[in-house]
Length: 160
Image (cartoon, rainbow, N blue to C red; front, side, top):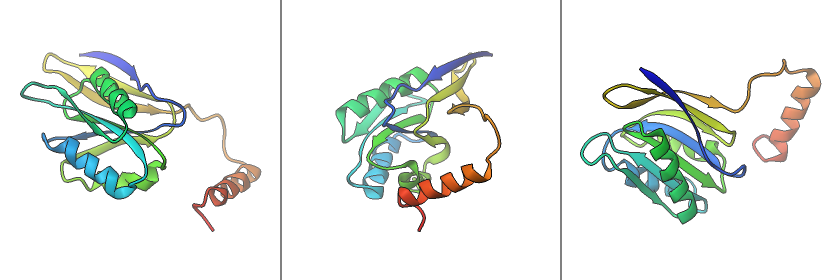
């Protein structure tokens, strides 16, 4: 087995979901889930087929994000993997909708952080082995850190 690391290419203001699903209609179903979860967001989807022509399929309502999602999905190249890039919402706003798409079997990450995808390659193909989401821990939260976290959540409207 060989290993590789794929850096997800995206802007700092772009959210990212990387997952695994398996059926040719996945691309359309993910599109519908994103639209139903938050109709005002802009997004693009790239989905890697695992059989047949093994193409990267794409959907979205933003051409730039769709092209970038397809480019990232192709770089990963693991059958039945998908990449969703979006703006205008947080992952918490759409991740449950994605989880409930019948063919979705796993979400590896849903984040705005820099993402690296760890790939394993065999003679059959590629697989996502794991995700590096953001940076490593630098310490343990202090009481002032906790206060700042709670204030931030209220500032962005997620807590009263």
